[in-house]
Amino acid sequence: MLMQHIRDRNLGFSIKESQKVAKDISFDEYMDTLRQKKQTLTQSIARSQLLLEYISRMEQVEKWMQQPGVWYIEEVPSIWLLPHSQDDLFLGDTELTKAAGVWYLQAPVTKSCCVYSPDYLQNQGIRTFCLAATEEAVQTLKLPLPPQAKKSPGCRCLIIPVHETISWSEPTSKKDNYLAPVKQILEKYHFQVTGNFYRMMYAVFDRTDHTRDSWHVFYVPIAI
Image (cartoon, rainbow, N blue to C red; front, side):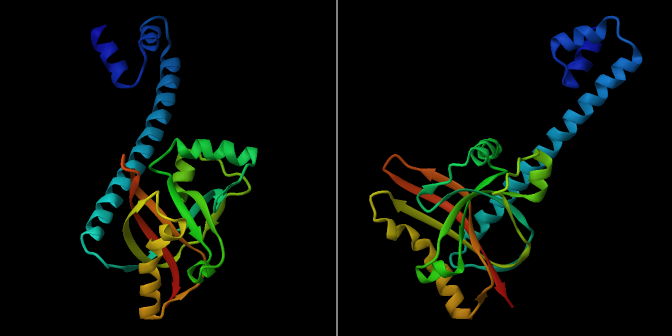
């Protein structure tokens, strides 16, 4: 009996479920229960794999940050973007707000992201704040996709990791200083931006001295 309870516990059964299994349950009923546990475990493993991928990416970001000024060109897969505000204006749609609540609960698999129009580099255009997730994450976690959600197609991107410390007492205009390395690289190597580019936040720390440390990566689609 003890071995049976230990077996059930390791399979994820609650005490009540284990007690039920130990009583009058048929083999077919037991197998149905096991298949339900299999589905739950499979989903748990898939989510854990996504978290492992996040940690691996953070280790890569850590290496990038140890080489100031480094940049790369990579083929970036498509991602889903869920907008929640444009500049300082929140998008108040009920369906969108409800979906965003679900997305927020899946951090860090879902990440904060800022999408810029190409004109933003010339101090024009708009920026949209979003939540971002890979297509695999959307499918695995069954994230809701309201009409406002958009898929950013996979493409060749200029990858620029940036560490920035800002003070909330600074003027808003200074808080976009992290665009400076993007502009410098684009101008120096004459890369042509082919569409909206985005900044993915991988780690953000709000300090007690009213400063924010952030480690983020720019993904800029370019023509080669």
